[in-house]
Image (cartoon, rainbow, N blue to C red; front, side, top):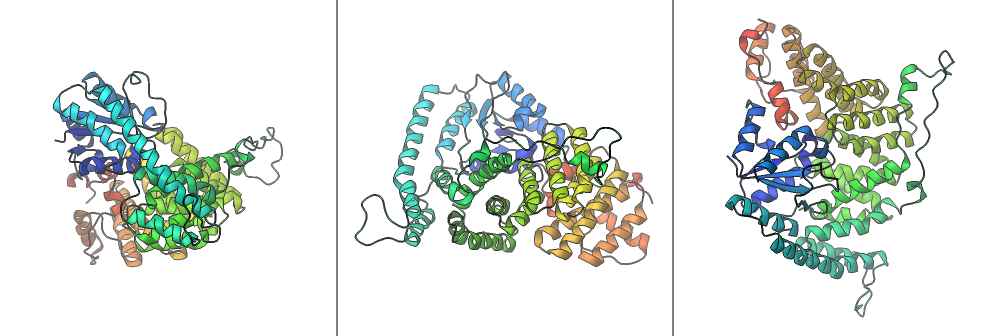
Length: 535
């Protein structure tokens, strides 16, 4: 059993991962639901770990503040004196928890040695040792560390970046010869390579570079969202607009909403990329703020992500390319946002940016569909599954000309049906997702599309089998293997299909990486007892 339990909303999983890893790097024993093994009883495992932990970190975000599960876990930790709250978003902490000092991680960038981690360590050690936290000592340490970070940021990062913006001239103690922008960028990269740029400095740098990458904020931020078209009176002609399109027309994304999402996305992602291990990625992250180098920098980042599908920063690369590309009308931006929507389907902001992108390229119906998906994701993150499912059902037909987005929506609908054991509906939705993925693979083959296609094929086979259509499941597996070399989801199903079809199938058995990564999905699709299966 771990000493520290992390409580958070499931849609924040990728944001919480760096916190768990940083704590482990500092020597703490940590449990979060990524630790679940396939086949474990999900609820019972959480209950055991929560009861055993000596400290419970509750990660407050927009999503977790609205989560019943997180509030329940936080309430138990509070009542038992084990609560250690952390803020990832600047949110109003739910009633009953505001009296507890929450460490501000809203500007943290994942560094295990960052000041925020040093301060958090003080509170955790006190909990683990069974003593009270010395609030005054922690406050003094917080002031000292954060003052040091601000000072170093001013003396290093700002001077260098302002020098770049000024056309390659130092502002303080200029040397005898003029220094070029390339020289200053090389100096920044040297600081990164030598570990002299802290996570907080990377955040500072991202904020300074933001205006160059996304443009200055304009009056559009203050402008009201475009008014939705007024629905015609009952019986009035619709001028050729279908009922579905008319309903979808009420979903839209304003320029102000897009700008806010793009800026938040850029700040959160590019600060990580400025500390990326690959120097080419770091260089490209800097060059995104320069009109002359932006397009080449975006292409370099895209090429890196395509060549390194296992890089944990891949989602951030696509997010940055999407936000910057869309803000600057670069065609690569839309493709990057579609990739990001598949990697981060529970991020409503990605769907809002994608909606604006489709609208910019005159794909009005797809734009409406993406806006509906953003509303569905928001509802689902609040635990309103029925409302989310209804919105996704409305969105799916509008995305027929956007196969990557349509595939993700169909997959989500399949997983919702799967969660209530409605295997018939699940098989229909996974079939739609698989068909859309095949279009994507034919049009733009890439590792991410192939991985998603295999996951949908496996979920389709499992859903058909669970719904009593075993022979059809086996036929689907055979077809997917022949067309795309899809692995069987489990050995028992593979053996039954070989007997059923009286033909050899590829012996490769491996659950798709996307399914392996999510313990909830793993539990849902685990093989059912043999006696419940159709012979």
